[in-house]
Length: 337
Ligand code: ASP
Image (cartoon, rainbow, N blue to C red; front, side):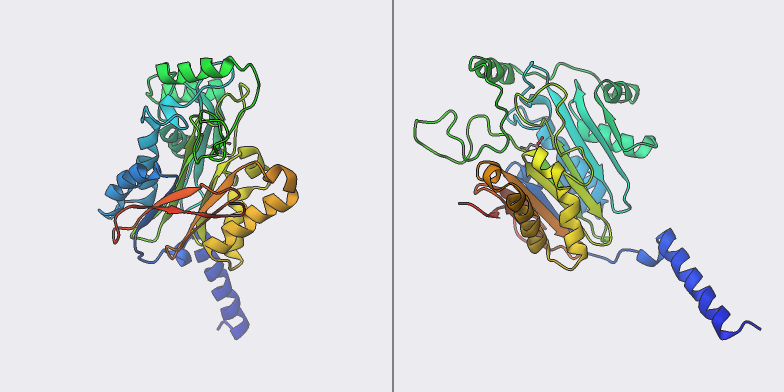
């Protein structure tokens, strides 16, 4: 006959086994929602919503959403029409993560218009998390992606225009910039405005996923990789807690493990809004002088479907779609402005 202590021990063992196998953490039913950084997130959300409204998987939704700006020829900050690096190469960064801590990413990938789909295959078909440069391209081609010249005539013209200044000054999220506008004016979004699509979704089964895709900073040094393909920096998903993504100067986000920080703050009890605010403030407090002129924005979603967003500079917006209201663009609050 087992005594009480044995029964207790066995129950404990079974409970931890269930937790390890995931059986104890089955996700509850949820109201689907998708959120994306920036106003171009509206089109991405629509593609994601088509998946979510039919009861589809959040991972399929964020991939479908991310593919939209990747082929938008008017979008010079993501995918095919992304502005090139200093030397004229279009090099793309992307990452994807699901509710079971599975993730994949590519960095400095050239000649492939859908880096997000290559990132998903890194996650699903390799034992690795991140492939870069020539190796990422080789993997993509092996998986059937067609290599192409991604530099569009528009992007090439903008690059050549920039070259005339012959100054190495890559910019991200230049919504406070005056470039390309009348002298003295400060307007949201200059002609080289450069932003990332970060997209987070919660599906009807309560599963969270996220994706992030970008061409990085315009005119960056060849080989520069930002936060977007770095799991924990540009994107992090914890299926039990929430998900976060970022946009802005990737170097600041990497320094502070930004998206992981936002999710970890939610784990400690903060709402998505409080978590985004605390993470932004940490960046600002650590480099107060630099923070006056740089932009970083976080977007977060928890397993209950609550959303938060916060940025250093004014001008950061996100798009939200949950089927009850039409897809809408929401301005995020910020430290300055
Ligand atoms: N976070 C991106 C990067 O640093 C750029 C951006 O979001 O504007 O590559």
